[in-house]
Image 1: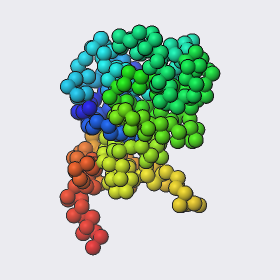
Image 2: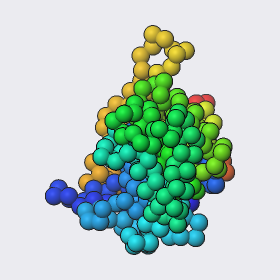
Image 3: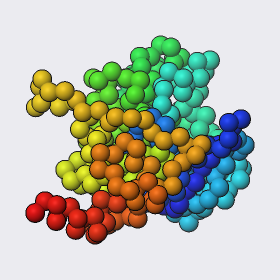
Image 4: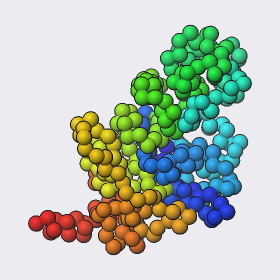
Length: 329
């Protein structure tokens, strides 16, 4: 999949909110790309735009495109998208407690996708549902098919949501905060499940999260979002060990560490910019301890630190690097 210069806005009584502002990234087959950032930075809007789930109006994809293989998803109408949604691309939503229909059995909800998108008989759909429950670690799947969501724990419900997303064997899975509503022990089990499923099926995953612990566990590459833009993207090792953007460094510094017992966390002071009137320059300027005059007026150009690592920050400009070197001497 390739996302190129995606812009998404929402019309409100107070004006137009520029929720996503020129997001671009690629996803390779069998890869896990994590999109991280604090609440309101545009992560979920990006994933919904890929899936064709932005309500228009009030939403509007004003520019850019999303290519999935040879399909341009942003140009498709609802009827065309239905042939892709759930079949080629599936999505796991944030809260398993509300993602399932409380009036339908688990079997009915699993079999619905198979019957809708394939020519499978009811018996074939049932067999596939049983196999999928086994894959996600649900014991006694034949009996469980007859039960309702309220008869399952939160972790079990999340496994069922994953099973529903995977039952039509999609090539791309978008997981929007899949472990947010779960306790730490269940989170670990779900992350291990994602790893196992990816090995068995080869599915590509876009993981939306603000939890860097989750990212460290399963991501191959990480895209850091801030104020509707991807400001840094690189491999897991590049982002965790050689972060270049001050915001990325701030995120990592604000994570509790067991080897720093007794030391205070370092929060990122201030608040994100108002996306009704986004800044012309770098969106992180007001909170950045290294901000320069140019940061206020001009958005930084992209600097390629390696073939896989790029960052939007004026500190990476050759002129700024020369000044830093001179100062250090």
